[in-house]
Image (cartoon, rainbow, N blue to C red; front, side):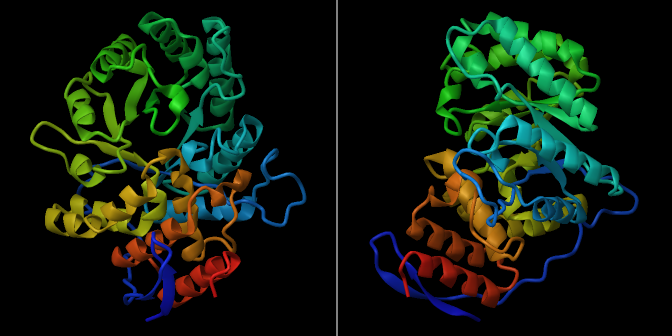
Length: 391
């Protein structure tokens, strides 16, 4: 067990001793006679190239080998990869040209990996949001990215559009855009309704600030093109909205939870249904998520709950407001567990959370048995403390 001093919110340094490590199973244990009851995607982060010479705030530099190795790790656990999403800092350091290269590289890696599940984000982030934009410009931007993702060989996750949020005059504009795009895609897509807690510019998405009214607009778009909807991920961090919408989806259209606060309950479901998973927190808790899903597949609800329960405080801390900075905690977890050699992020986003916040991530990861090698994780945490002047 490792010992170190970690800062509290009030600035005090408090001694901390890590717990013994837990050995997680190497892959989801699926019963031979039954398929897994849930589809589970982890939205995946990118590894910055810390040695690249450039302007980190202006042009992203990616360590492609480490970035793709992390996707291989997720696939090895039986998890799918949701590529080039907000967890990959899409729109917060990762631009569209680099996102397309990431999608293209990931799609090639998926083709070379038996059973690998991949879906990638298509949006309008190469279009500058403005109230003077026309809806046709938004449609053109969506169509461009969808065509590029399909050409790369990936399924599509249709991301929420800040450009559309800026120029739409009401629900009818959202319905027009989604109807046009869904009529053009080759295969069913996953829609993504991302709440304003992730990106304030998405306030009022689907045509109003009232969630029930917005849900009606969203459901109308889904019903009109149900044959082109694999499912929808909603990221509103309120399980009531997800459950209400889940019960109203057309037959064959899946709900993918994006609720990083209540995912254990939503994935387990109730007598009227359940949610599949497309979660940013699965990047940080991948081995626990895989093990829990294996237990659920084996109808062992008690073990499923026992595994995921201690991950929820970690997730709630990582995703606390301002929620858009959650990627910092995700990348910290990858660094602590040896998936990358540094704690540097695209766009300098490693500085988006305070040192006490990072220290609490360490404590909660330890409590959830998510430090693969506590001695090494402690050594890595000490390096972060030293950079901040804490001996």
